[in-house]
Amino acid sequence: MKAGHPRRLDTSEKWFALLLRLYPVHFRRRFEPEMFELFRERRAAARTIPSRARLWVSIVLDALRASLRERAPHPRWNLEMAMQDVKHAWRGLRRAPAAPFFIVLLIAIGIGSTTAVFSIVHGVLLRPFPFGEPVGATYNAFAPLVGASLGVEVGEGAGFAVVVAVGIAAETACPLELIEAEETKTKKQTEMTSFFLKFGNRFNINTPKI
Amino acid sequence: MKPPRRSPTLDARALAFLPLTPAVLNILVSLSADDRHGLGIAADVKAFTGGRLLLGPGTLYGTIKRLLEAELIVDLPSPSGDEDDPRRRYYRITPLGRRVLELETEGLASILGTARRRVPKRT
Image (cartoon, rainbow over the protein chains, first blue to last red):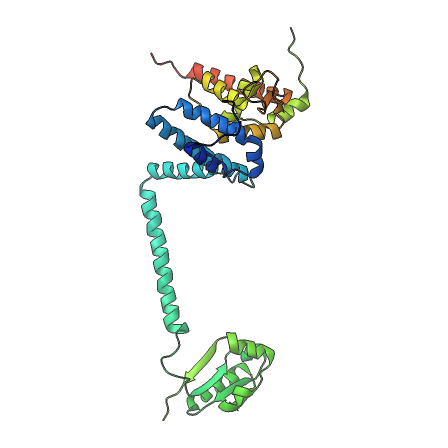
């Protein structure tokens, strides 16, 4: 039979045709008939089952490697480079088998310490109190830095907090403004102060209700 | 007899392709003797490497495509004598491809000479 002439494909040729779909269309259009011809020749030469198995392994690997290379946007991005990296890593592992143990140990220590530090930060700073809004005085610690007045929101039982706020105001020469708690909820702050009230540190001083 | 003078431009272009991969080297060696189609190249390479190098379809035609793009080979229409398949493309090595092959084989011969001098033969 003349090669390349249209005819029904047998099972192995169908599988090979499927493998050829890995290649880009322009490549298939140009070389598909010749690749089929080469495949048929190789298949005819492989008569025993082991040799056919070897042929298929080599054909599949060849198709994967070559199709990736044809599709890769950059010549460095191909399977050969990746395989070289894997081989290089494997040789390194065999030369120094203790290295991975220390690497894993270091990663474990790193993960453990990060978790421990975050647990402390979460427990001390981030986790909300197990009770509702405390009664007391709230003021923005950044207010003296931005030149705003030290607006102290005074609630019930805020005696001690007010004393502290007065102390801060005296130390920083910052004007002190006592605001009743309900009023401050609706009062508009200046833009900078609002920012710090939202994102900055807020000192919540809770004094026990007597 | 004086060796033929080479164009410096051709040499500069050829040097840019070195070193060659095994597939490129073997395909160029195969085409240096005669114009061949893909199947012929695969058979020739298999023959002169003693069956040690079997070019797979993807490697063979992928390399041929890159050699065509690099102008190291050109494709020719099938000669009228080819009765197997009139659509078969034949490939011919270009002067640039031949120069690349010469430079590569010179380099390999030099390495081989050094290796033969330094590595004692096992008896």
